[in-house]
Length: 464
Image (tube, rainbow, N blue to C red; front, side, top):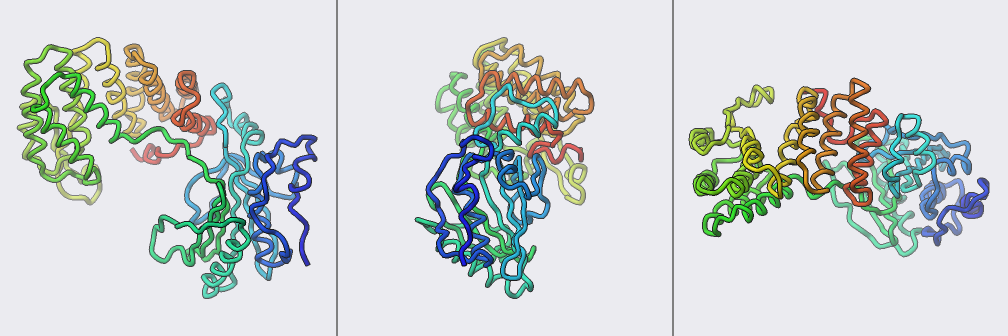
């Protein structure tokens, strides 16, 4: 016996009086499937990804018996990763003596910009219902006994791959723990990727179909940006290439081993700084400011230094450094490190009143306070951000400062005035740039803040 075609295939949302979904060729072969079999239920549920553009509201009309949630998480998704979607629709179907749980997942495909930022959680829920579209389908099956889980994953994965038209095997790139994902398989057809595996710890067989798409990201990372600023500051200092060579070599060496913490003894780093800062002392103010900015970025990239014997040499250069006992910061971790206090940034801003050097310095000057992710620093960081904005010359600098100032106010978040100021700065940033990948990432951060959700990366805030 074969089951009917998926409901959307014939309706295409005609229940709503519109046909807004993008009709695509079926990427799964549904012919001859036994409707009540595990293979039949799994493939038909995954095949919903053949239809694009279905919103949460439209899905709810097509499948009124589904349990639909927006702006929430699904805790039982053990092993699916931590990406939170803006909508879920769930139903359970018996198949071959097991219960198949299907979750349709919805995301912002085209981020609404920028005036659509919600004012409240109620506004955010309405926006999710009308704007979030289907981007993934996950099925979860709990085998009757753990011994048969791996075999069930293998047979189901093979059936799914066989039914996926034009399937090309791909590699599941990462496994967090050996043996965690058993009989893992992945295939791709166009922009659709299907994965299946047995999650040994959760004792679940999982299969996921998802449209491949670039996740919004804010940029290339702090270390890459620090390196860019350092190299530009070196050029603006006007010091000759022989003087700059040791500093640039130290930057390249740090970039290649940036994961070391604290940084092992690096005499060449100190020697390079001594030569560089010494040469900078004879420069006029604007060029000396550029040289100090380059030195600051190198020390920031180096991070904590394991060799505290360098303290006196760095202080002789004018760097503010402190010897920090690790057990004061990390319980049970012995030892001491040498920490740089970023004072060269302040000196740079005192030496020049405007121009490119100021724009290169403003964002790092504020970034450290906001990155601490601690509400105890947030109030001063928010005030500093608003003061620094008055000196920003370029649109890129203003965008970055509005973003950081918004984050500082968002960390406070206890007072209505702080929340209002955070949203003002989010909107100001998006008024500068509403189309790039960094704008998309910022929009989602502001959307989460409007929901009362702590944005990704802010997990340490309450622990400070």
